[in-house]
Image (tube, rainbow, N blue to C red; front, side, top):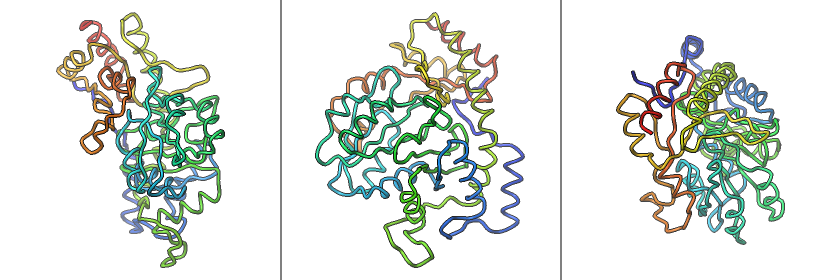
Length: 360
């Protein structure tokens, strides 16, 4: 028995959509608004997350880069980010010439710590990027107070939280811009892809230029931009996946609820939702002092459990910083994520839970 930690769920509908584009031959579009399938996807994504505007790009990293460019983040600026996340968050900042300043997280849900964040604000702070890690919603109310008090814009890294809400509002829509990923392992996929959401027309118009070499009508570059366009094939896959997303999320929740029930009596830290929070269950993450032993045995039994992230960004060879982030260090050595994606069956969940109970 092999149970992957996360796999894309692609069916005949996606294959038909891709085949149609290949036969048609219009694989991409360099026009300002993108091709037909890009525009169709953007409309469906805007409807889902309840945002005025969606700008599709070719990866979640590109989404973060474009959002930073839209804010004119540049050399000499500082951007506050968590270290306990995938490296793309910090790398996007580096790509602008700015400096990522690493902030600790809350043990409660692995999202950025507002208190530590406040301590690290300086006159050079240009933006804040909280990450809704594992699908958990960052403490947006406290972040909003900080943003308003210090007049610092916020870009939400919602790469892992598509479908997560707080008080009925989707992640990515609380502040200036929100950035999503459609990498194959996410709750839905485009093959590769990402998108930015915003309710600000000025940002939207600028982002449309940024994703297309800064152009509007062709050869009229007006702002700095790159080729961040989403190809038509990927947009078509994403459009189909968006229709399937509500059911994907429903099954993830069912699996998460069952796993929590079966593990509830063990001495491990289980994930939980705050009041008014609805998590997408991208990664079901527990924490335990016996992480390495449990992870080893689960993997030996074919259970694709994984540790996200055993090396915090600030400790990777590229960054090598001595910043003291105590909760980040604790999480890096204690967390295990367990498979609960839609292809995981009830029997799989029971097997995972039994294996962990037997180890403990």
